Image 1 (cartoon, rainbow, N blue to C red):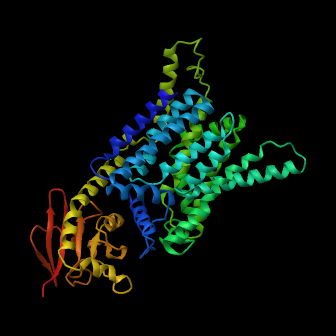
Image 2: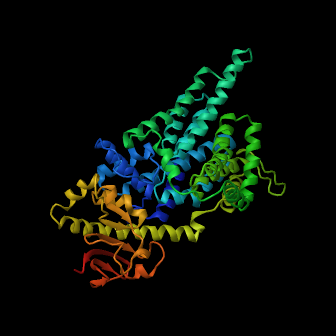
Length: 502
């Protein structure tokens, strides 16, 4: 089994590395870069000086913050996320093997290792791979010959510190355990030992998240506030339509998942059934609830449901009874090994046919490659921006002094790069603003003398205002004079300084 685990880990890591190219630059999303800011503020004993539209995730604050503090590099964050992803694929394979045998394991290895939606999160070092490790580790702990309830509880708590919806699992476990305990006290047979309550360590997510928010902002409910700060993009009906369209497009996988759920119920695998219920239908209901309360809902929030379907489908695949193929795992002493290998291959092909695969998604590969280029451009721009900031004596000190008044934005960049630039340039949050080229005009009302601009043509759509930033020589726009500090028309990015024409 160790050899299989090593092979699965290596294959999954290789797929992620091929997609992400993590040695060229550190691809980190907005939320991941914000975690480094949170770590910096917490270790310095300071609260956030400005609002950040990224929900704090204590596990990422610790892991990503410490990695960046130790290395000063964004790439280790990518490497760590790839390692977490590969570990999750191994755990999914092991759990599927324990519940459904080798065919289920083969299906799960491919379904998780090649999942385009999971790898899209890995590419930006988002939290889902870390949470997935916790969910699967808890599952393995609970289906062991001697269940390890304490390990499962700790795993769920850590998973919740990456993805707070894990509390749905711990909450459901609490309800079931309390109900079973009450029945036992009324004379019913005790079906679980009292040590099963160690699973409720998972609820430790709530006080830790609250403490994290208090130290970071002074508001114990800051994470909830962040989730509600962005304008809602779906009505409850819209969320239901989104999910319906998504899963009708994955109908074969859904049908296999239904078969898998039936098998798990038949085999009385109640801890796994409870976990899949919380992360599948539970998350779906939670997203509708978010839409009801007017909270922004991203299609990325559906990923736990996708993963539940993929895992349940791996078990469902073993329940197929195809007369012509005789799709059953043969005993080693009765059937040739070639037939066993053939059945494993069928399971892998079935996974490829039913789960959206990253290597086959041109849009995902193109998107990840474009994001990689943006980070390579940013790495080239940072030394130029740092030099421009250092060139003016006292500038950094004056920026830091504007916490209570003024708060003039000193650098305009793509909104998604703001946290990364705050860290790389050692600037306060309010000193870096999102660039909106469409607002640039001759009136000079948008740009101010002394500002710096990092413009990447690959970010967003090209507008007339954006074309005015593509300068190789100084030029004026009304009362504003733009001086290029770095111009690379071939790669399509520029660093500019704003000066006054007077």
